Image 1 (spheres, rainbow, N blue to C red):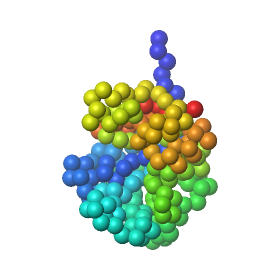
Image 2: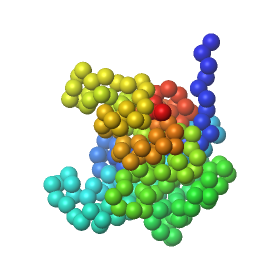
Image 3: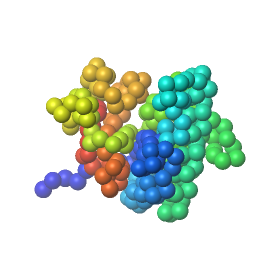
Length: 240
């Protein structure tokens, strides 16, 4: 008889801003937002402690898509503010479906979110609240992938999940190369050496140093967020 996967105690889920945009491709699509919130509730009901890092690309990409560019520090600061908007939207959706949720921001915005304090975040999780980490690391030049790795290490997460629109990590872009193969598992070091476009090298190196496994999975399949948060074997697992 097959054994059931071990239910993780504490997980950090990295969501792209684009995941909140749904078919609109920009802004916040409420149907997509509430669909994510409902899956998060299932995981919360399973007693998994869930932290979330959400990107801001559905609101701001620094003008790079138009071939233009603002000062990098200014653009990154604007991106951090965009993640706060997404975090507040996700918080409200989660609370409407019955999950007590807190937003902790690396940039001080006391009227709308609590400041990020590591011990406070852990205490919220222990009390059964879901925690959304907003504003990345609070510093320019660092992506929300790196923020997700950092927060996961800081709070002692068992697993870092990266929700994507593909079913794992491939040797090449499967949309361009039909011969690209999907890895069921791969080490952090191999992912770095092969320059696979999963996460920033800094995020992968941080996870490698702290032996934090990463699971990359397809969030577009209904139920996959819950399955991934429960520790099911989806997509690709990166580990030492």
